[in-house]
Length: 103
Image 1 (cartoon, rainbow, N blue to C red):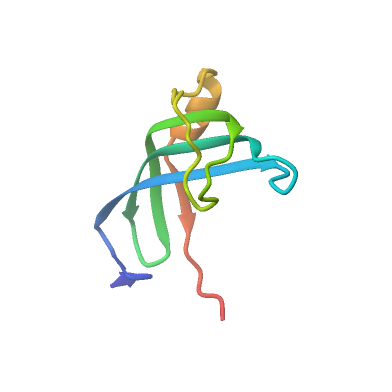
Image 2 (cartoon, rainbow, N blue to C red):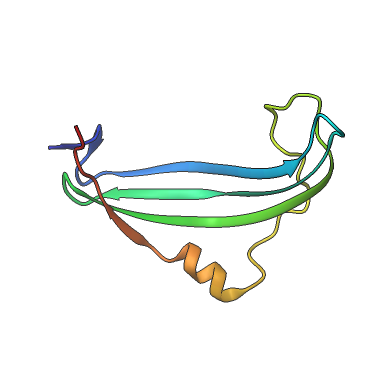
């Protein structure tokens, strides 16, 4: 059986990166932003259920001039684990989600 192109009983690993930044680029190129990165593992339990777990999740911030290429990743240099252990536990604990077929 397949689950959305993923094989039941299989494990898949991916690298995740996400960012959000705010500023008014038309006025000035300075922005403030935060970025997250980490590895995530998916285990396909059956055709409807998937287990997921983030590993080595880090967060970084940036306050400065936006690179010329607005599609480039933020130039974050201060990557670190979550400073609050409760937040880290929330992110790093395994979680399950259900796949549904929506027409």
